Image 1: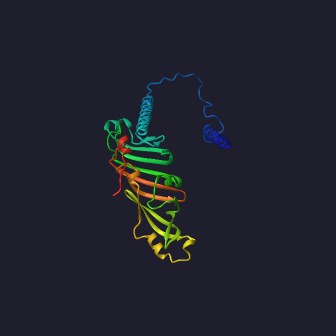
Image 2 (image 1 turned 90 degrees about the horizontal axis):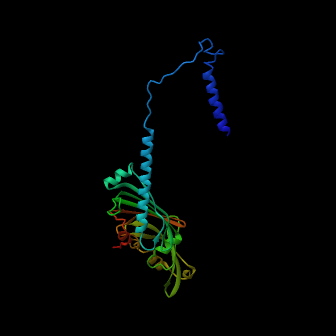
Image 3 (image 1 turned 135 degrees about the vertical axis):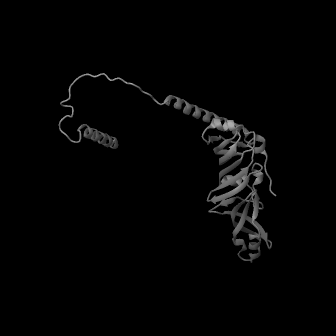
Length: 278
C-alpha cells in the first residue's frame, strides 16, 4: 500500500508540474476569450483488435483440445500394469498448421505420478516430429525417469544379488553372503553405474568383507568379487523395444535415468513390446 501511495504521489507531482506551465504562477489562459466551440471529427480508425482477440482465443481452444486428445490417446495406450495421468504440452506456433502438415513439431509429456505394477515413478518425455494420430513412428523421443531407491529395488533385479541395492552419491552398493573356504562370509560391494544402451553396467570400485573373514586371508575373495569386467544389468527387458539408456545419475535415495529412442511408435502394441539384451 505504501508503494501505491508513493506512486500516486509521483504521478500527482508530475501532473502538477505540467499544469503549472514550467513554474509560472498565472494561468496561461487567463486572457483568452471565453466561448463554447464545436469539435468535428473528420476521420477515425481503429485496429481490428476484436478479430485478433477471436483468432488468439480460437488458437488457445484448438491447442487445449489437441493436448487433451493426445493425453487421452496415450493413457489408453499405456501397457498393462502402467497407470497414471498424462499431461501434454504442444510446442510450435500454430497447432492447426502442424495438424495439416501431419506432424507436431514438439510434444512434452509429463506423468509425475505414474505407477508401474503399483510402484510409483515420475516420467517426463520430450518428442519431436510426432504424428497427430499417434499412428506412425515418432521422429525422436527423450525420456527422463525419476525413481526412489524403493522403486528401483522393486522394478530392477541385479544378477547374482539377493538383497536390495543402496543408492549413494554416484554409486550403488549391494550386500550378500558367500561361502569361502567353507565359511559364510558377508560382503558389501560398491559399484559405479554406467549407461550402455540396452544395459546398465555396474563397475565394482570397492569391497568390504564382514567380520567373519577377519581370521582368514580373503584377498582371493575380494579379487573375485571385484572381477575383471563390470556386471551387466539388462534394462531393455523393462522398456519398449528400441528404447536405450543414455545416462544414469545416482544420488542417496534416488536415481534419474535418461532414455532415448528414434522412430518409436506410441501405439498400445508398440509400448507393450519389450526389448531384449544381446
